[in-house]
Length: 199
Image 1 (cartoon, one colour):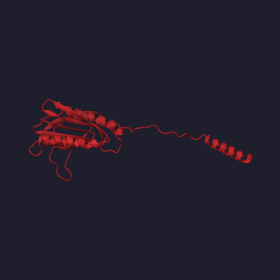
Image 2: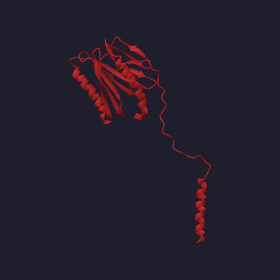
Image 3: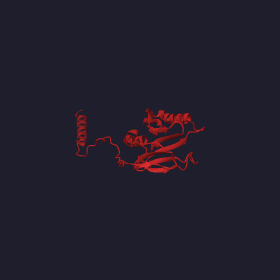
Image 4: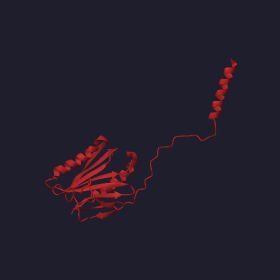
């Protein structure tokens, strides 16, 4: 009977001895986010002859005119992107003259429908009205959650002009990782809206 007890004690002693080694203690790493180097803020004027408006936009972005829209020519010459290479972001801007085909009601409805398409993944949508001097009005759609375009807007004079914008970041990352980037870009898009004027 004493034989099995000594084997068990020896086995337990061996286990305890192997657990008390001087090797590195493994511990989970703390939660971290990727480092983001934000570009230096500053603005430059947008006053292109092919668009009926002007505004100040971030100097760290590059103006890129749209040449194709689903393999076709864009509906209007005043379709462009403001591209920030360092943050891999795009502010897509599309201008429509209000006419019999693109009526004011149709364009406004389209803007609300496009922003509400994100309702499936958005936690909420904050619809912020814009009313500025000089006949500039519209809405900003600030979306929270895992959505493709969390910041959209439209500006109009309700009779002749309509501009729609959507902010995108081309990155596969969690929304909480991209939140600081969107917050940085949203401030500059709002500054652009605040300097916006019809010609």
